[in-house]
Amino acid sequence: MNVPRQTRTADREDTAHRLLASSAKASFDPLVEIDWDAPVEKDRYAIRPERISLYGTELWDRLTEEQRTELSRQEVASIASIGIWFETILMQMLVRHAYDRDPTTDHVKYAYTEIADECRHSIMFAKMIEKLGAPFYALDRLAHLQGKLFKAVSNGPLTFSGALFVEEILDQLQREAMVDESLEPLVRAVSRIHVVEEARHMRYAREELARDWRTRGPLVRAYSRLALGIVVYYSATRLINPRVYAKVGLDPRRARKAARRNPHHIDTKTWAARKVVATMDRAGMIAGPGRFLWRAAGLLGR
Ligand SMILES: [Fe+2]
Ligand SMILES: [Fe+2]
Image 1 (cartoon, protein in one colour):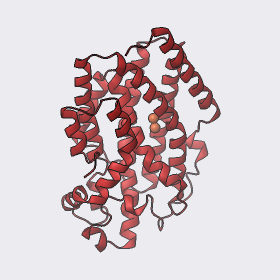
Image 2 (image 1 turned 30 degrees about the vertical axis):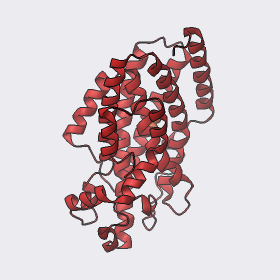
Image 3 (image 1 turned 90 degrees about the horizontal axis):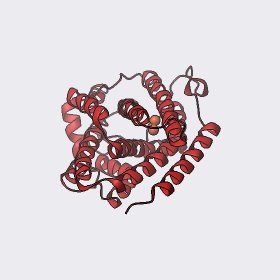
């Protein structure tokens, strides 16, 4: 189904115009908005306990309350590390996207706006990781290399489907955290800023993706489905770095194994991915060998 070029451009510019207006009204500088001097409240959870990867397992039962809240901070830091990893990939992909296009159009202006947002987000996540008393949980070499390759060669559908996937997963967790008053205030403040700005990114990615996908032939679609499956697999299986477990005195290998088999953890991932899975499944993007990777990553249920 091909939409006439003019209609498409008008719609695209119309959306971008609105996104730019909304960015002008509600954008945040986390360096100014967040009180970085306030101490982290260590008796509170940084994420809801039932979202922690070991929740409900035998290992979890043996942890003290102190170890559990510590683990919550480390897991948030691990997820934020993946956030920085992917935002850095995305910034490069958007720069490449803009390079080929006319910067006086609103949709390219919006691409630049999004790059600026992601730049601030990555600094915000890095500062939060430090405040939480965690290291930057760098990815293993294979995932790091795969990211390097992906950001250098990805095409339109991959740029926007990859972006949408990571953004939706983070969004679901952060939406829940920002309204839960029992959780740690710094994590909630960071979540709130990210949710507001990412709502626009997701709208942009969803529309760019739909527009682009319609114009692609079977070969590019097949390749994109597989490459997306690989990105999805790497980001979803590495959300929780096994090094977080050592921080609470657990054996990382044993704890990682327990988390992988933990039905609560699989349910959390399936829940966080449910919206993006529905969108992409409808568009026919989760099919072929790529679908196997989605399932193996625990995103299509148990
Ligand atoms: Fe972001
Ligand atoms: Fe984003």
